Length: 192
Image (cartoon, rainbow, N blue to C red; front, side):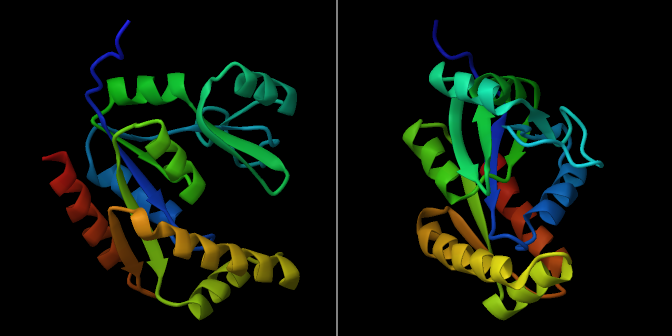
């Protein structure tokens, strides 16, 4: 059976840790009617403020492993001791029911979408500079210095690997509204 006609368009918004993707996606969901965030599946336990089916689908590492073996994921990765992945079924349902599906997968995930030949628009939010990024990660609090260092190393690597994104938009410090406007315009052009 052929893949059913997908009405919706998929947009990937990536940024390094602390790069602003969550705030941007929250704003876009209000701007675009009939849009949704693609809910990913994770093997980690929910944080107290996180809800099943809203933030993630939470499953056990064993279940995750089984879904990998059964080929249920478009993409998945292992990050900081936990699995995160995009299930094909959930992606298909989201695209069927919504005009715009937003996801904040990272660089590897995007490349897996490319390999799976899933059409999408990809936007990478660049930090104005790494000094600001470091400050943002620090401001979240409770992150030990060596972990901050590690996240910055990862950020540098991700920025290097983001060359094949359709759009790169600099998220200037204190100018989130402008970033949101630029991203909105880019998505509007893509939806036309």
